[in-house]
Length: 239
Picture 1: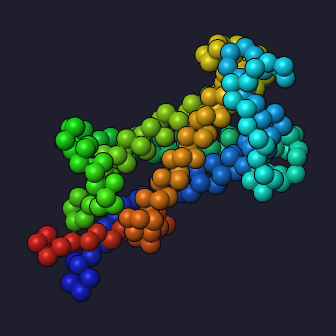
Picture 2: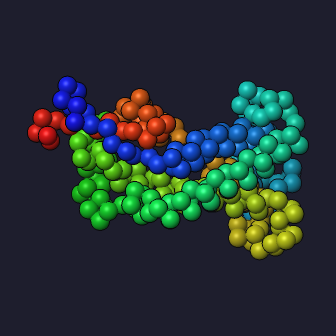
């Protein structure tokens, strides 16, 4: 314990967790920007087995600005190359994280909510604390709160797998090898729409995640994800 600052450093993130986290940042950033390049080639989304230019669009949007796309000029082929490359890197990175998480117990220990965290009273308490920007201190800061755990599990085992699966469904070659893929989503146009909505949900998650990182202690959170060392603040009564 540092008596002058009431802080104590604890180990929070293992090397593999930190590496896969930053690899995800790179992969998802390039996937988003190359995906916008692909979307700009036909900025309309459909539901069901539709998708011709004359069909009614489920969602119609304006093209995204060039500074948000990879490459910055309109080039559908190059955008697809970037997208497919980093999609497979994301899959490999995810498998590394999953294997490590199961082997070392990280998923069970750090991500699965404890029974006491899932009671309605506790969840409502966390929602109110987040709304008031009150973050845990002392021993409570050693573990993720329930909202963090639920969000991380939803992203790691919900949004990202769905994004990968809908992306695979849009590949004619994979559809030929696995013809059941389009049927899972009611057709390739529906898979494309779900792919876009899933990516949008991930962007929303990242915005909220970064906001929470900044508001709950930017340098402390960054240090923990770079070095693994996290400073816990204790009050006088916690000592």
